[in-house]
Picture (cartoon, rainbow, N blue to C red):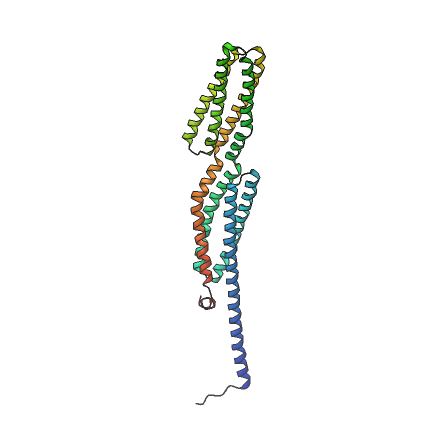
Length: 300
């Protein structure tokens, strides 16, 4: 049987139908390519925001003022929030594209990032307290001033006592002992602030207590050796010593919290490991998305 040629009308319908199918297919591919492009942009922004969060957190830890620590900590938290937002926006795009490998890599990053945020909150909370920095400021500011005031008042009192030649050597020796022992406490403050070892700090505090006892004994021994005219200066010296020791207690308490030392140690150890693993997941995700071209999108 001979086939009947298509009439002109039928041929037009067939051609139009085929053209429409090609146009629809082309439109679908373009839509998919646009989604892939958006996914790549989100992945790129995700990497940028994570780097910002990490860098700002490091600056918060290293900041030398309370205000700077607070500002950098705020920047870090905001960037971390942006990371979370990008993750939430990227996941449904990858799932709708059927990109199982990329979805798995994103989920891997999300899990690691959750660990990162938990640790980072702890680090930032410690960093903004700045207890070691505050202890250092007390040691080299008010405590130094109180120690110098103690020395000056004691030397002024001793000057009157030296007028009595019989007691001059004794007064001079006791004055030197009192001043030296206070300086010994000052010398121990800096290493106490920098140290993270509880046992070492306890040993330093015992040495400080021994020096304080020696200073107060020297003052008591001076009292009967000084004339009435010097007693006012001796009381001033005693008040300055009391002030110094009160500040020393504050320094020890701040130093014991060790927030700067602890936040730095966490940043250099645990956080660095988690940060590296997060960065590895992000690089793998971006590399996988970069391989998605026209051919493998049509074949997905």
